[in-house]
Image 1: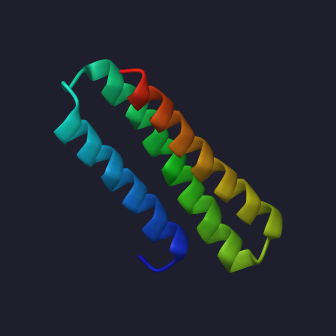
Image 2: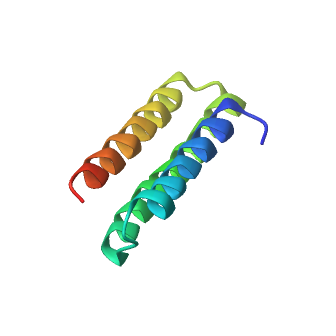
Image 3: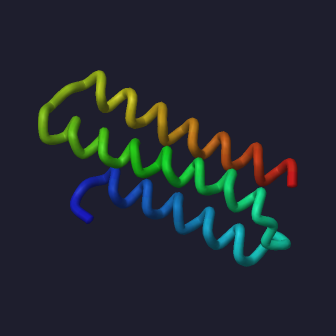
Amino acid sequence: METAYDFVTVALFAIMVAYYVLLTDHRMRLLMHFLLSAVVFAVADQLGNYAIRSGAAGVHALAVVLIIAGVAYAAIVARSR
């Protein structure tokens, strides 16, 4: 873990896992929804790391938007459980 994107996305993933394990009834459907958010976090992490290496500001913006979208989707799904 070298970049801020690594730390942020792994921390958000860990929060999602802790929420699922500690505060839900372990339904498979909820896990699949959280898996979608985890994939979004992974893509955002890779895009953010690429943006740091290449210096592309537009890719930074896309990575941040994906992180926000992943958090919003996970929050909506968790609240509707």
